[in-house]
Length: 277
Ligand SMILES: O=C(O)c1cc(=O)[nH]c(=O)n1[C@@H]1O[C@H](COP(=O)(O)O)[C@@H](O)[C@H]1O
Image (cartoon, rainbow, N blue to C red; front, side):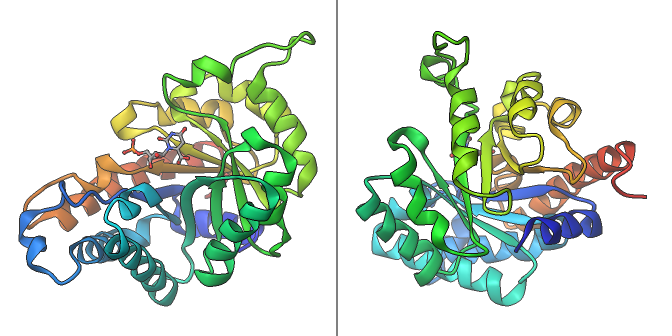
């Protein structure tokens, strides 16, 4: 999916929401534990309940890998289910990969060749040769950690060099030279508020993956005020607040209601920016 197609989906659905499939077997409703694959059963119900109101899904690999081979199977089934039933959804493998080039090639192969996923999150710490192997797949996206949502973002990302540039700014300034805007996005946490203005000075046109609304307390209004561009340029993720809206048998309905609340807020914001009529 290219940037224009993503923007068209956002306008059509009046939503720039990414639903995070951070499916923790210890948190899903207990009746699902009788299913052959409880994690997949949960994901399927969440996807069916939310797909008309979001434009992307982001399964986070940690939640699947923690279950070993069964978890990986649930992850693969989830990806296949979305691709077959909701082909307009943008799928993000949240894996935060990155290693020496020879090893990154294998990560890229598993997500882009084996699974055919649209995008993968990567950590920039190891530099250009750790990211390049992900960029040789036309039509696939690499999402580089820029300014993260967590408290620990303060530990390294704000380090200032002798030119006065902060590390997160350097990461975005340099890494955008490695690929065009149709292949590269950046993660910027919703909790970073007004700093989106600084991010936009460096990457005005790129799409940003924005986790941190909902459970982490980031403000959607601020993200839009400081981070939205002429093509929206935002995929805002919410995981726990949506998928665990209820823990009983009505969990999918509750997830839908929660998704609808966020989607309606996004619709208003898109209208206020005149991106939709
Ligand atoms: O790369 C990410 O998606 C990510 C980056 C970041 O800075 N902060 C962050 O929360 N995330 C991920 O986004 C999701 C947020 O989940 P909730 O806080 O439950 O909405 C989790 O899968 C996190 O691992």
